[in-house]
Image (cartoon, rainbow, N blue to C red):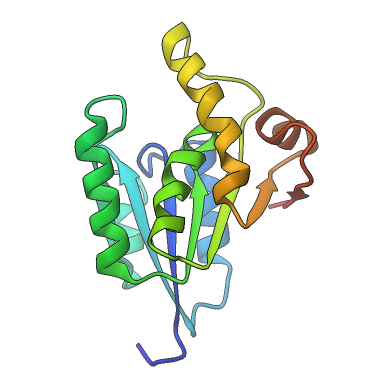
Length: 170
C-alpha cells in the first residue's frame, strides 16, 4: 500500500451473508478500481459470511464486532479499536438506523468522510423498545454523517426524512 492509498471501511449492521445489503456492498466493491483503495469491512457478529473468502482473497480485512443489541459497551470499545487500528479516510456505513451509532465514533476519531447509506424502507424488527432506540439513533445521523445516500427515494425518505440525500443506483 502506498502513501496515496485511500483507506475505506465498509460497515455492515450484520455480516456478509449474501442478503440484499451485503450483495449491494459487494457489487460496489467488486466493480470499482481499487488500485488506490484499501477497503476493509466491519461486520456485526462472529458469523462467517458468504462473501468472506472473496473479501479476504482481495487483500481486505474483516473486523468482527459484538452486535450493539448483545453488549453495547463491548460494541463501542470494538468499533473504537477498528477506527484506531485502520486509520481510515472514509467510513461507509450500511447499517440503516445503526448508521448514527457507527458514524458517531467515526467523527470522534476524526475520520473525514462519513457516509450513511440507507437500504430499507421500514424496520425489519418488531421489538418496540429497539424501534424506539433506533428512531433516536436515526435522528442523530445528520450530526455525524458528511454524506447521506440511499438505494431509492423511499429508502432515503424513511431514514433521513426531509433532509437532502443522494440516491445511488447499483
